[in-house]
Length: 113
Length: 114
Image (tube, rainbow over all chains, first blue to last red; front, side, top):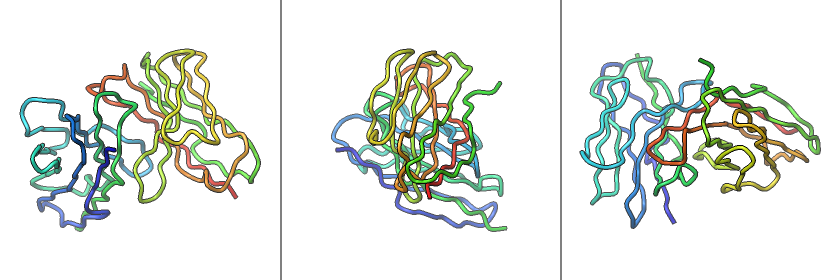
């Protein structure tokens, strides 16, 4: 069965510092990969997705993620975070259909001033 | 543009009561979903619908029911509320079931069963 592991439940980082949020998945078949962001008291919104092609994917708000098939990882990065990036970030994996999404437990990004 | 609208935003129920969580979308999306989000865990799919009149179970359907009489609306019904159903519930929609299509989420309903 597929699973998604977000290795850190919380990541504190100083404002303007770089950040990496880690996501590993288990699957023996090709998958689609997603990062969603949830701002406080809001629903989730799509940050970026990998379906095929270039392994470096750029998303909204300056975030990017790299698909690494050999390490089954899809880590999210941003070179310089802002206080407005305070949110919870969810990694999700699918084998093809939206109702087959498997979600990670989420990583809370805490920005320190 | 409203997107996905969920009501109510908060609710406290007593054990054994019933209620309906409302969800409406104005994007003419075919697919709609109900998730629950528990602390420290990822989203779990309760039910989904691929179009009006068609629904199917997700990963955690027990204790819930849904209907989809129109494209716009996808209510979730709790018949006999139990403490284990205390959670945050999210409704989402997408144009179709292809994973290339993003899901659009409502702001959630925070439900406590006491």
